[in-house]
Structures are given as structure tokens and as C-alpha cells.
Image 1 (cartoon, rainbow, N blue to C red):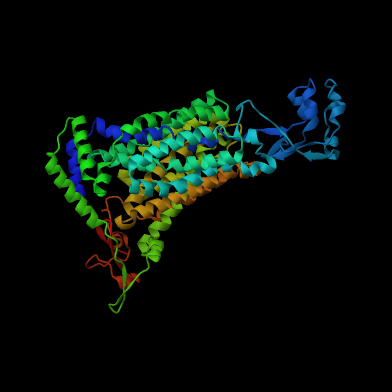
Image 2 (cartoon, one colour):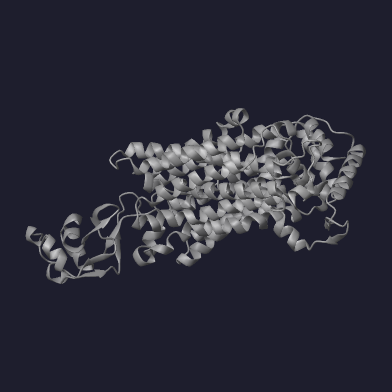
Length: 586
């Protein structure tokens, strides 16, 4: 029984209660994870701060009077603002019992001559947030470079977790990994909201980032039992929960302004996963590949009962599954790799070299790899930068989170007919360009036009989200079958690198140069548009199984007579090996 026949079996079972139950863990994770992947927006946002002067706390002065007496002015963000890291060196004890007197106002001449000292403690503006990670551990001024690690450690964890959890799910099964991830998640999310040390919070963020990668096995768990004709629709709809959760995150953060309380409350939905997972079946596809045919047959029979469908009798079903297992084993035999020399001789290629150079062996494959690596890095940096920039592009970070998440819904699904008509490459490049134009226009917009800045940021978020969705489709189409998984995972890793950098731009670089987020994100989106044009367009093209097929489909130096590739003209060695069930010519 080949994969097509197995899909036919799933088709006969149909779409129903069992299918949705198997997909439910993915949707539950999608409704949970954005509370933590977007955590930097509300657990650790930028907050205004100034030096704490203990003697002035005993006075009856207003806040403005205390600042006038103790905090110097400085040029920051293109305008005069109160210093966040220095205060005047005065004898504050002499005035702590005195009422405010206008003569105490510091004149310009006095500011020039008065000595200033670096802060040793800080006061924070609590008009928007009552408590944040930055407030609790004073991650400002000289310690300000430590603040972005709160978000970056999450993305570091995701970069580690993606290959690790993918491997564990393939080796030990989807169900057990989902259960372990859910238990680990609830323990880490709650404990990291209670620990007294910032280093422990960072460790928790790293672990939560690793667990974030469980969304991949959860998605696979659902897709592997979904009938073939419904996969496209479910794939398009599968991103909607992330956008909905982002909108809900803005609402919850508006109601709960303390970061520890907010994280504890938003950890509770994972309990639904803990209740659901013990009743979740293992993927029957994975069970067949492991030779556990009896378990797979029982699950398929259960699915048929739940959905009012029928499957072949048990003995016949077992025979079909045995045939599928046999063909799957044939398709996954270890590759036999050799280089075909010009004289007809062959020599073995070291496995490590084959793995290292798998994505750059031919001109077309190099072109695709360079294009995707650039696009994914740019989309990761820009998308996460825009998602976490509520205080940069808006005076209301809560409304920004709600509306920017709302923009993701048409961003992911609304470009489907446009892509079908105009192709992947042109729409991808166009989306990057519009995003770049919108973000860079913010630089020329007067700061008083707050709604215009807000609207331009939302336009940028809409189109960069559209780029993210198209990249998943184009990457899975352009890389050939024999290197498709590696191509997608390595491209995704480029996006993770971009996401790791984005918090430092928002938190550190923006402190010195207010315009830096707009410049960096806008220029990066513009570069993404250029990288998109490097790619060939996969619209109406067949999926290539081997790299030789890829060259035949997309190479600009195809033979005009037979349409086949001339290895001498391309000037590359041909390495023949089997993989993913098809001969792979690299």
C-alpha cells in the first residue's frame, strides 16, 4: 500500500469528529503560544524612567517639581527630554522638609554648572504598566542591554527546539512528545512567573521557546490524518488561531498590568491540553512506519466508527497496512552516494560533505537557497520587529496588538487568490516592497500624526504577514523532495536569527536613535523584495523530486533539443543517491 492508497483510506473515513479531535491539539497550542512568543510586548515593554532620589520622597512636592529639581534635560529622540540615567549632585537633605518654592527651579545656567551623577536606583512611569520585567530588575541604563534577552532567549529556544522536537516526534511518536511538552510548558510557564532571579526567568524563556516548536509535531499530527482534499483549506485556516490569540493578548494585557499575574493567568489555558491529550490517538501513519500495525488498524477502525464511515475488514486492513509498511521501508533505505567522474569512475562522497553541501550543489539550487535564506531572514526580522513594536509605532500598545493581530488574518488568507493569479515570486516581492514603503514613510510623517503612523505600521504588518504565508508555500514547492525538509528547516532557521536580533533593535538601538526601528525594518523589507526576485516562480510548475528535475524545470541553460540537462555545460558533478522514495540527482 503506497502513500496514495493510504490517503484513499483516509478519504473513505472522511472528515469528522475524529479528524477534528486529532487536530485539536494543534489549535489548542495555537491559542496558547502567542501569549509567550509575543511576551516582550507586555511582560517586558519599554517604560519611561528616571533617577530615584530618596530624600525627595518625603517632600510634599509634585512629581513635576521633583523632576525639575533633580533631573537634567538632555537631547534624546530628536527632542529635549528628562535624563533617564543621571541626576543633579545636590544636598537633597537640605530641602526634604521644605515646601516647594519657585526659586528652586533649576535655570539653564545652573544646569550647565551643576555636576550630575549616574543613577543608583530608578522610578518608573506606571501610567501604562504597573509592573514589568524591566522595572523589577532595573534593566535600564548600563543594564539596558540585558533587557532584550527576555525576548531573544525565547527565540534562541525555538531555534534549538525545532530540530530537537521534530526528531523526537519522528523517533518516539507525536502523542508522547505532545504530552511531555504540555506538562513541561505548564510547569515552566508558572514557575518562571514566580522565580526571584532574572537569570531563572531567562532560563524559563529559553525552555518555553523550545516547547514553542511543538506546534510543528502538533500540525503534523493533524495533517497526517486529514483527508487529502481538505488539507489545503485547513492549511490556510490553521494560522487564524495565532491572530485571534494575539488580539486576545492585547485585551488581557489591558486588564492585567502586572507581568507576573498576567503570565500566570495566561498559563491556565494549557490545562485544556492536559485534559485532552490523554484521549488523543497516535498518528496511524507513524504507527505503520514503526511496524505497529495492530495499533494503527484499531485507531483507523475507531475513526471510522466516530465518523460513521467504513473501512475494510480487519484482516484486509492489516494486509493493506503491511503493504504500506513494506513500501515505506523501501523508500527510506540509506542513500548510496557517489560522484560520477568524467572517466566513468566513481568514488564515495563523505556523508558529512553531502549534508553540508546538499542545498548548494547546482546553479538553480544555489539560486533558490540564497533567495530563500535572504527572504526568510528579512521576514523574520521585520515581522517580529513589527509585532513587538507597540510602544514604538503607537501610543496605545494594547490597541496596536489587537489591530496588528487582526491584520494577520487577511495577511495570511487574503493573498491566496492574488498568488493564484500573479504567481509566488511577484506577489512576494510586491508584499515586501509595500511593507518597506509603509515603514519608511513613517520617518517622513510628523510625530503629531499619531494615527497616520499607526495606520502605516498596520499596513506594514499586513503585507509582511502575507510574505510569511507565501514563503511557506513557495519554499515547499521549489526545494526538491530529496532536500525539501532540510531546505524548509534551514530557511526557517534564518527567520529565527532575524527574530533573535529584532528585540535589540527595539530596546537598545532605539534608545539612541529613535528612527532606527523604522530604518532597519524598512530597509530589511526592501532587501527581502530583492531576494524574492532571485527566486524562480513555481506557479503552475510540477514539484521536483530530484535536483536533476529541478534543473530541467528552472535552469536557464536547458537543452533546446531534449529538455534535459547537459552536465558538462553546467560544470557540476552528479551525485546519485536514493532518498524520500525517489532517485535524487544532485
